[in-house]
Length: 231
Image (cartoon, rainbow, N blue to C red; front, side, top):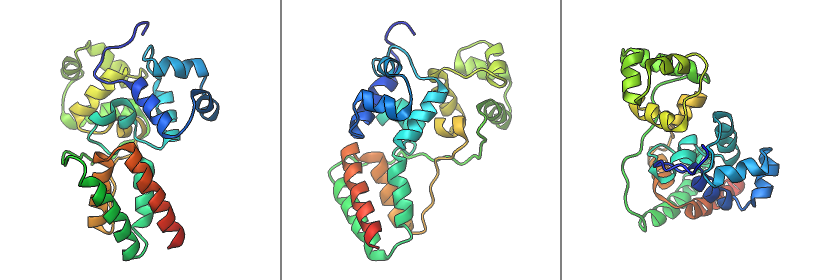
């Protein structure tokens, strides 16, 4: 795109926020992730959108879901995979350690508006986006023409998506919503669905992931690292 996009999503703005959250300059980020500095600058300025390959690369490096990278606060799917991964480790430590983490998360949650629309993946997909689109369309028992009408495109485009072409970001969002799967799962096959042995602890963590700010996430991550180190 040669001009700034005016879509409801802003990958560039989200990327800049997440880079600052990690405490990186644009130059440091470019060097560590091995993406050209000017390319990243164009992403953050919303002049162009990242390719799917770079979306996956950036999300992996930042340890977040692709949905969070694309949609920011608008996504109802899990966001901060670093937070959730650490919590999964903490799920196996002693009860007092989990309680310490939970109490801190609950204290933060009391300062935030309660959000209940948390979504999870429940369909196993592959790492092949083309196969996934075809499979999900088959589950819905709809034709390429019917899917193209929802996407407001031509039927031949669906055929391309199911064989070799990558949908642009706005259509990845529509496909995610239509099939009720995360963009993360649709594009990588990795489900955003996390089970905890201590369900109460898991519920608090997943709500914290959904409701809290990145700075509050950072405090919880530091706390969990300390608790895990001492457990």
